[in-house]
Amino acid sequence: MGKALEHRAVVATAVQFKPLEARDRGPRGDLTGLSLETRLLIKRGVDLVIALGLCLICLPALLILGSMVRMSSKGPVFFRQVRIGQDRRSGSACGRAGDERRRENLGGRRFEIYKFRTMYADAPAYAPTPSDVADPRIVPIGRLLRRTCLDELPQLINVIKGEMSLVGPRPEMPFIVAKYDRIQRRRLGAKPGITGPWQIKCGRNGGMHDVVGWDLDYVMNWSLRKDLWLLAETFLFALRRRNI
View (spheres, rainbow, N blue to C red):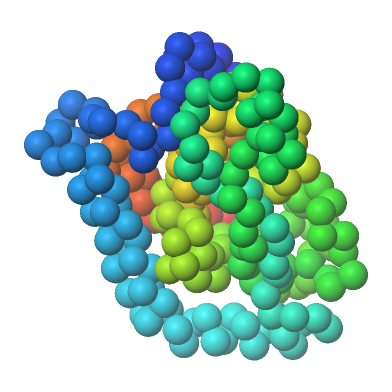
């Protein structure tokens, strides 16, 4: 299913692509009377209101979880890692020189992502992500955090800073983005998100091709209505995972 969707998204993207900031209209029924700039301001406003609200509401839980991480093993409370963010430039590369510049800086803005540390401090920072909570690199409390996705909560800081959105493509590591072809790189047309269709359809350990397919579909068909739907789906997804 994921590969089939990726194929459809790639075909559509190969025809025309613009980053979210460059589009002049939204999907039918998505506040079409408003300009793109207004809709993006609304998206940013929703991000800030929800992120700040969650930080205040979840502050006691964040402090407790941080203390549990600190006591579980030696090392920092937060895991920090460089990720590739949004590429705000036009999606149409002009000439070989432009392509070379894109390959050099990977096309998107680099930023440092925050998570609760779920692995031992001496685990390689850029090794393949554990696909099993029984992985020996994961600390005891890390199994609970990863199963419930609570380790992602510190990314609210990235949302408040404007580096991420609540909903968007998965924030990827530089060595993964470096392998993207010209079509796959177009997923950088939107800010990466804490959640997105990739989180619901593929999970945090989804394969690159499946994830890119869902991300391209999101960038091509972005709407405020879809963002709200994905937030609701993520809430239900988290409740289901809590019962695993």
